[in-house]
Image (cartoon, rainbow over all chains, first blue to last red; front, side, top):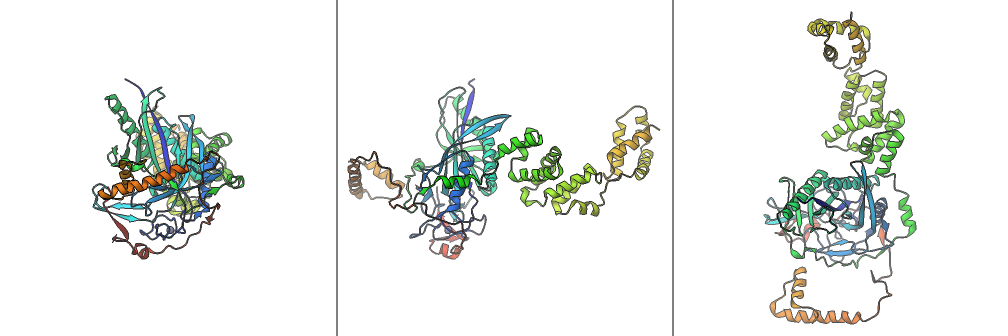
Length: 481
Length: 94
Ligand SMILES: [Zn+2]
């Protein structure tokens, strides 16, 4: 059987973090009642003129620099013409032949190997509106409803080279791109709110072949998991077509999350005949060296550099460093803790363990939680000085996560201070031994694992508050009496 | 003729224009005249001329990132032929 390899390129749209839209003063705020964030300009009413938002250009330059692109000295906007009611003007203002940035790259880490993925171009454009179809799908609908709140929200589109050869690499690219856009404060990158969207161009070819196979474009992947699953499916599908002696049809396919398959999208043959023309209502941009340098100054340390530094400076394992630097907020949180408390590995364990577990379980971002570096540091100090046990510490952390109270207030309120008083523990241990004579006998006759059970009983008796080391010591002493 | 009937029909389709059968010939001729003028322009040697991106010698017209109230939903929808639940109601798309 022929071995195949996939060739994948991604087109990513990211919403820029501006207050107002790209060509008018309307707010970019997410949500809002339909058609309340609109004005004559973004509604495309006759007689209106767009004026470019300077922040959009700043952010596009910033993203371009962070992605190692060449920034164009001369750039312009173009009209991309197509008829679809999500565009009130029947064209989208985008950039065609003179995008603001091109020829960049980013590096990804997959299975400990670094790979460079080329970036073909990055351009600015306006977002379209939102359509709601009556019925359950676009094809079954009698009519559609249009909300133009998103129309004119600034986007950058980032087109990669077809440099990825597996769904894992595509996922790593999107992870890295998202991290870079977040680190640079260019975009919020919230996939669930549509501020980061991804389409993929996929083809397969016999391994080692230089000739590209026929590609399909896969759309509608709304999460990182969806991207990976959709690519896995589409690659498998194309291989099957070829193995059966068929040919892959060049087309646009939509990922159906519920069914776990890609499906042909009904599209007209002329869908890609966009008849681009220079936007006469906007004058060109000339971007000089000073402008580029001013923006370059604002670029912070980027995720991969920071990961490398965390490994070198704090001695974190590669894996931990990767997880902790996957978002700027987590990495900042980590460094704030380590600066005061030291013990980087212990801090990263808490972040990767309890903190991320609770964030994921509650579907929250670090910002949404009341946990602060100071709070975590306090818990770590309380464990270190023996005031609470490690087990109780997790309980305190969760309470702090849920209520925002300080660790000291929580342990006081819930009476969670560790019992490190030998006298008090001895009494409890004596009664545990008395109530479990069989285990005591087992231990004394050589079944050493009975000790664990007895320690567990003491912890249960004290609701986890006993100092485990002390319990162990006292038990051993008493058992050998 | 530099434009064929088929090309005319394609362009009309892209622009969502329906052209009556008896006018097809007239439009083909008119478009053809325009294209011929363009052909004429092409005779000029423009090898050393930068393509023009805009007819005005103006660059970098921008505004600050400031938010202002829009026009309100009622006015936004005021000119719409059909409205439902605060949204523009449009005919079946595909
Ligand atoms: Zn507007």
